[in-house]
Amino acid sequence: MTHYANTIDFDFSRHSSLSNLLISFPVAGSCQGMDALGIRVSHTKLSGLCHRRTFSSPALVCSRKNVFLCNGSDRQFSLHLNASSDKCKANVKPHFQLPVQERQVFGKAFYSAREYTFEENFVGVRSNTVQEKIGVLLLNLGGPERLHDVQPFLFNLFADPDIIRLPRLFRFLQRPLAQLISVVRAPKSKEGYAAIGGGSPLRRITDEQAFALKEALKEKKLDANVYVAMRYWHPFTEEAIHQLKKDNITKLVVLPLYPQFSISTSGSSIRLLMRIFREDAYFERLPVSIIESWYQREGYIKSMANLIENELSNFAKPDEVMIFFSAHGVPVSYVEDAGDPYRDQMEDCVSLIMDELKSRGVGNTHTLAYQSRVGPVQWLKPYTDKVLVELGQQGVKSLLAVPISFVSEHIETLEEIDMEYKHLALESGIENWGRVPALGCTSSFISDLADAVIEALPTASLVASAAEETSRETDPVQYAINLFFGSILAFVLLLSPRLISAFRNFLV
Image (cartoon, rainbow, N blue to C red; front, top):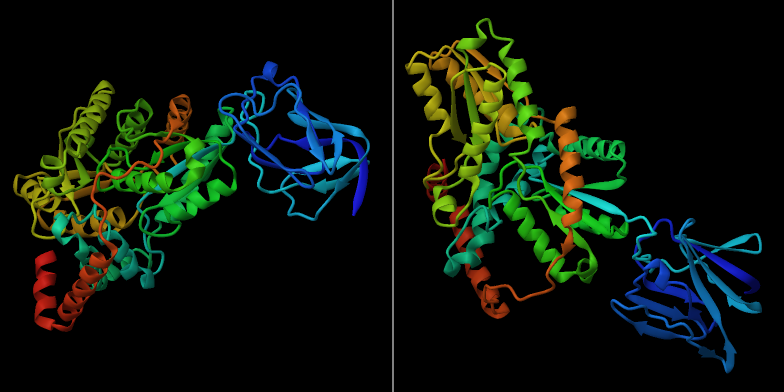
């Protein structure tokens, strides 16, 4: 099909960088007036009956006069960008033939009162005159949504080398060991999830936080797409990355939903992101800003203090209530051997919250303990369950539990704190029990996250390109052999009831 036209308008309002632009018509051309607009085009591709590929960075890809010969004829076109309308206009000589193909609608070409489509391999124009597409990536743990999901979720969790840190010589056993642990722990974990409704609410709550953050950003005059990336269950990080690429995001802020940094939480998710970034050319040109921790932000501290103050008012004698901060634990080796800043940040966070409360006239005593330990290794102390018993023995009668490392309700707040620890506390002599809810979508908290995103945008920079990882690559044949024998070992262990029983006792 052949059509004739004098002018074609391409709408660039949805895009922010020109990469792989495909113009499918037989045209020769020159670009004019672009220097004044400060446009930098990294890769332009003209394809159709004439095809020329040009590269230039950071200079322009086209000169003031650049002629293409198409089918033996000399034709010219000019490319202009209108800063007010964000449209790129191609002017061609009259009676110019434009072959048009059916394409999926991604952008529109308008001419002669009819519209046609152009190539989807279009990314946009990097220019101050074109609005950027901002993306915010929320990182979280993830959780099984059904009881059937529990065992595979646990496998994903324990297969992460940032969760179970094996010596290099035994890393080939990571997945077989994860399979064994997940099978052994699944029955007890299913009981916990069944007690809170049959699955984790974490995805639903995180989706709600993502929507609230998007709205908060919009109120602060920033349009942004907000994505949820879970580490161990759907939507996986890879799913979120696929979507933000599909949306042609041009600048990204990574925001872990963990106030304090740990190599086992934020660190694990960020490490996965870095691997994806190194392997995907899309991220070579995407500025990224990563907010590693934000526990010290005033908005977060005040939001936590508000929740604590509100819950204290529910006690008959608020002044006599001990504030009990319970944080998720990590093995001591993470802190002492791997340099994890988690403990220091947690203690600093508690101190900041208590200072805020004291400034409001709240002078309650407080303590910090760590929960959720697994296995026989030493974890950060003091342990939550041990401290609860000790407080009861010391005569503490009123206790307000504060889940300090969680901003969303999930199994460790709804089952571990609300059920297990509450029962233990009451058994130990504590008479009045209260618990501060997780921040969730608290407006002051969400507003502060929005401020954190806006403040992080100017620091966005290109991620280092595919550098070799410091660790030596494993020979694939040797890895296959190791995995084979490791799988046999796991299979043998699974078939031995005595070994399973011993291993279960080892993990508890």
